[in-house]
Image (cartoon, rainbow, N blue to C red; front, side, top):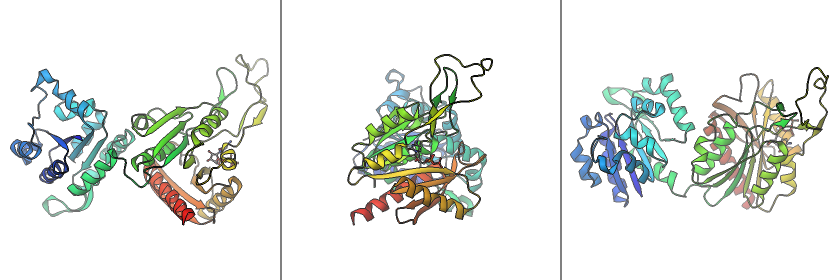
Length: 406
Ligand code: CTP
C-alpha cells in the first residue's frame, strides 16, 4: 500500500519514527512529509533512512513532478501523526501552505489523524469544533490517549501508541472489521411530500445520524447502501467518497420505500433511520395553490405505507431489521416504555429511540439513544457524538445476530 505519513511539530514525532518503521516492515511503501516544525523534533535524515525514500517539506522541490499533487493522488492512505492543534486547525480550514497541506487537499484517500497536545488545548472549543468538522468529512481520529504529557502533566492529549495508530489506520482501508462480509441498507434524512410545485410537507431531520450509522458500518467493514431522502448540506460528503458506501437518493416516502425495498432484498441488516412522512397530500396540485382561492386552509391527506412494516413482512432468513424512533418523553421511564411499545408495533428485531424536542436531537452533533430488543431488554444506552451512538447501535446489531445464530 502507498502510505503518506504527515509528521507535524510535536514532541510525539519521535514515536512516529516507530510508526513509519512498523509500516515499512509490514511491506508498505511509506512516504514521509514532515512540516518545518516537525524537523525541529526529528531530523530529515531519520525520516529518509526509516522510510527509504527522499523526504522534503517544500512544494518547491521536484516541481516538474508536481510532487504536492502526486503524493496525494498516489496515496491509498494518509496518516498525520502527531497532529498538533495547529495542524488540525489548518486541515479544517483547508490551508495549503506547505507540502503536507497541499497533499491533504489533493488526496482522495482516507485520512487518519493521531492528535497530540496538552489537555487544555485538546479540550478547547476551537479544537473540539475542528475535530468535529474533520470527522464529518470522514477523517478518522485515533486517540489521543490519557496519560503522561510533556513537562510532568497528565491527562488526555498523549498521542496513541504507534501500534494502535497503525492498526486503526490499516483497518480503515482493509476490509477487516467486525461487520466485514455483511451488506447493510440504511435510510436517512427526511422525506418531503409535495403539496404544489413550490410547497411540501417535511420534517427537521438533518440526515446526520443515518450518515454516521453508514460511516460506522463502512469503517467496520460492511458494504453499505445508503438511501438518502432530504439531508442537510454536507451531510453526505464523507459517505460519498467512501469506497464501501453506495448512495441513492429519494424525495418522497413512496420513492424512499421503493429504493429501500430494492436495496434490502439481499441485505443482511436494514436500519431505517429516515424520518418518513406519515401522510402525503391526496392530490398534488400542478399549479401553485393560492390563499385567494381559499385552497390552502385544508389539505386532504392520505396515509403513507409503513415502509418498515413492509420490510418486516418481506424479511428474508437471517435478516436483521432495525427501526429508529424519535420520541418526546418527560422522563427515562416514559422513553423506555415508548421504545418497547414501538418495537412491538413495528415487529423489528431492534428499535433505537432518541429523545427529541425543541433543540434536542435534530441538528445537533451529539445524540443519545436507547436500544431495545425483541425480549424487551435494553441492549444499548449510548450518548456522545452521532458516530459514538452509531457504533453502539452496531454493537447491538452484532449482539442480536450472535444470539440468533447461537
Ligand atoms: N417508518 C417507516 N415508514 C413510515 C413511517 C415510519 O418505515 N411510513 C419507520 C421510520 O424510518 C423509523 C420507524 O418507522 O425507523 C419509526 O418511525 P416513527 O415516525 O417514529 O414511527 P411511526 O410509526 O410513524 O410512529 P408515530 O406514530 O410515533 O409517529
